[in-house]
Image (cartoon, rainbow over all chains, first blue to last red; front, side, top):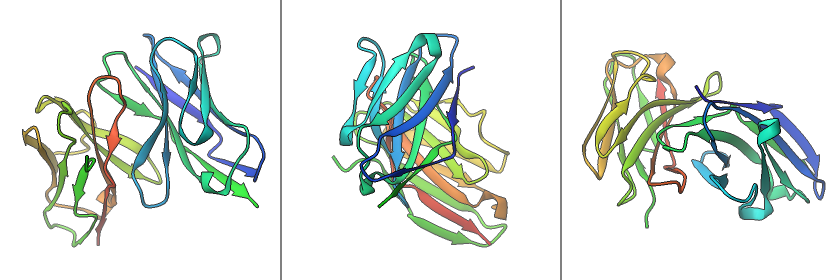
Length: 113
Length: 112
């Protein structure tokens, strides 16, 4: 079975600071990995995804993530936080058959002025 | 492209009543998923369909929950009878290939 662990239910950063949201996965097959963002009272929006190929993946709004097989990690980063980045972020894993997306418990990002 | 459309956006109902949530996936997407989101349990996959056929309903919590997909452009999630513990935000998502899921805006269900 596949699973995702997101370390830290809440992360607080100052505006302009580095954003680092951690995600570790467990999968018996090569995983497909995703980051989604959820703004209040909205659905989830895809930030970026890794399927195959380049392990550093760039997404929308300046976010990127790196797939590290040896560490079973897919951490999300952004060099400089903006107030508009405040939201909840979900890491998710799927098998290559892409039949089922399993989500982590989410990390709420707070951005201080 | 109007995205995944869910209705209603908000539903308040009394315990014991039947509730029907509706979803229109993106045209051309062959997979449809129903998720439930609560503070306690996070995002839970309830059921998913591939080409209108239910593939995995192991996440459906009880027999009170049922889902149908009569055609490629419509799905329903029904709760009968509803209970206060069913209060949650229910999301529908659709997908095709490896492009990731597209989520609807959700239905916030409150059972009183």
